Length: 257
Image (tube, rainbow, N blue to C red; front, side, top):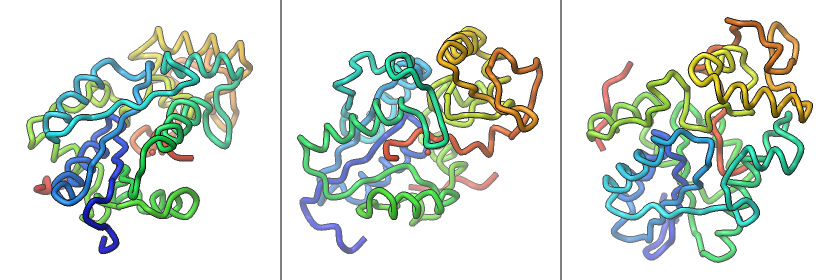
């Protein structure tokens, strides 16, 4: 982008997912010599523990530190705590955990730190999400992955070529590196998968959602409580689920970077 000037500050929001990791690497390579690059992460307690290992590996790959940005309101960084305090888990407009632990944490950070540009992990197969975000949230976004036509599949391949093991959560069949038992998901396929792979987390979400009156899952056109979901129920395929947990209110040959 021609508007980027020498000395500008670029904030890269790294979610511990593959796409944002590659976006960070491309930003450092493309702008690192003339801009201040700050790579930022919001740790969430409900993410898989291996996300921290992945963060450390990516940090070494980037050659710059990944800074941690946390919520002043929720020092536990726990989505479960947010749901409990707010007495609300999810709705048509999203989930309060994203707002409290990511959006508000980011806004608090921005009050103390100057930023000229933002980079997020929007891939070329998410052009619509990127365009919608630019219109609704921020216009100063550098589409580093989209500009190179890099897809999510490309990001996985790039990391593997670099010798960086993907977060364990992907190998467990989940579509992204979000929290396990993400309350934005309504797919019966997703929740059946959580019940199979992480039965303790499914039980916890079922208990809390029942107590708070949140019907999180949709099965055969009906919203229901998790403890009402039939065994083996399926719905929308997980691979096409759009439940990326963004900061703002998300087989081809590997590309070289």
